[in-house]
Length: 451
Image 1 (cartoon, rainbow, N blue to C red):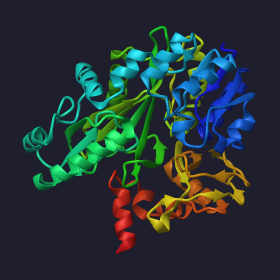
Image 2: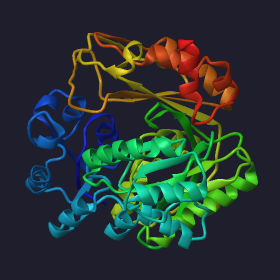
Image 3: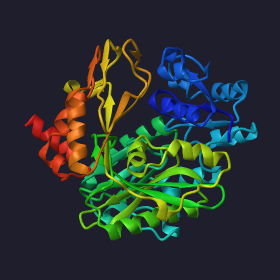
Image 4: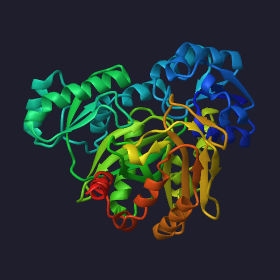
């Protein structure tokens, strides 16, 4: 087993990994910015190293500073969490050159799945259905117009190196393509350092379904079932996730799980990752992308399988065998996660900053909280607005829905604006309660509220 692990991240995910390390008897090292000096992950870790000033570019994304912290700490391995360096091959390569283990997939797997074009090629090679469209980056607007005319509108312009809903624009007519092309390209360049764009058919009103996979260094791999992630904001960022997807026919579930494992194995994948699909109204499914890291919504999978994904990641990185076969994976109950953010629903979800003056979090049977927040903590403008993940688990979906509604109504945060009032409305909406929703649900709901 590893003896010391540095967590190259912040916030709730850093706290989650630190807790997992402690449970396995592994020393944890936190990194922090000057703005995060009083953050909970700094207080929880066995030791902590400052990596720069407040902004991400000066600290958590300062490659030289983070690598120096890795060396100074004496850590044997680094857990990247999600975001930041978690899917950057150059980080894994740099760690390898220093003799430090990257807790994630091999570099070739990161590179193969690191952009949407190469990931799509891998899926095609693995005989997994993909959305019709360009096989790689499109050279210019003229080529994009030709492809769009061939596959039919609406189409999506998507950043090849994209993620987190950035660099994506829907085009409904030829006259709209040129302007949206420039917007998507500029956003992709600013977000990912690459303005390459691919063109795909827009699957109308799909469900967003992803499968959790995990493999060891000995060739063993399983999937841990699916998560339903269709409740997304206007920028395609997830708000509420749940597991399992209760409307997925068992035969389709089996095929999708096998496809997820097949895609991952085709690129020599190891450790935890997520294969994402779009599912249309006929339950036909299409490969979307693979996230080569732990997902924000991983707790719902842990709740319904009883598998601790962070423990497994650390054990696999230590060279242990998975110790889990596909037939051993059992799904029990239903789990839902709601992302609580420092955003004001009354001002178009603009970021909210300031000091948290009070923090009253829900509890009770089947309620789990993942957070780095507490009363007295200052929320700064530098980072992602995620404050907490509220996870509830019940015997079935109606039970989980009732617990989530109850938990949200007992969740109070003072001093800053949050999206909790919006989450209360969303989870009380009749369509969501019935499970009758897709990726267009939140825009429709907002339109109804504004009418």
